[in-house]
Length: 171
Image (cartoon, rainbow, N blue to C red; front, side, top):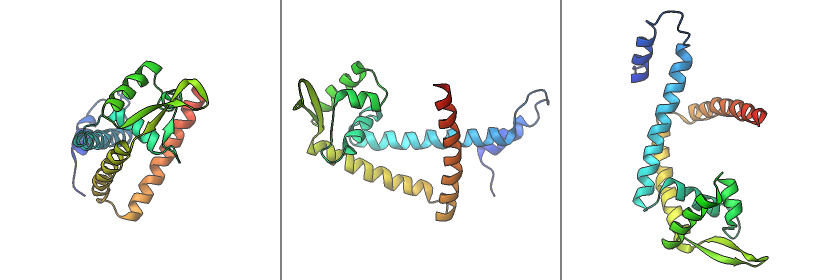
C-alpha cells in the first residue's frame, strides 16, 4: 500500500530516543482520525456555505428536523440538547428566524413560553444540504468496500464506546 503523509511523519518520530514514550501505531491512528475529521469538517462547511448556513445553525436545524412529527421544540430543550447557554441559543434562533428558516410561536401549554418550529423553507434548506453532504460523504467512503466500511464502523464504535464510558465515569 502507498505511504501517506502520516506514514512519513511517523518514520520521523521513530528516530526519537526511547525515553520519549510515543506508541507509533497510536500516533498514526490518532493523526489519521484527526486529519480525516478536519477534511470532513471542511467539506461540511463548504456544503453549508452553499446554503448560507454555518455549522452552529445547522445543529439547530438538525434538531428541529429530527423532532418528529411536528419539527418543534422549546428553546430550552434545544439549548440543553446542543449543550448551549440560553444566550447562545437565542442568538442562533434570532439568525435563523431572520433568515426565515424557523419561527417562534406561542407555547400552547405555557403562556409565557415559546415553541421553535422549522419552517417549510428551513426544512427544504436542511433536506437539500443534507442530500448534498450525503453524496460527498458517500464519495469519501468509496475508498473502502462495504465490508471494510462496516469493519471500520465496528472499530470506531468500539473507540467511541470507550470514550463515552470514560466520560460518564468522570461526571
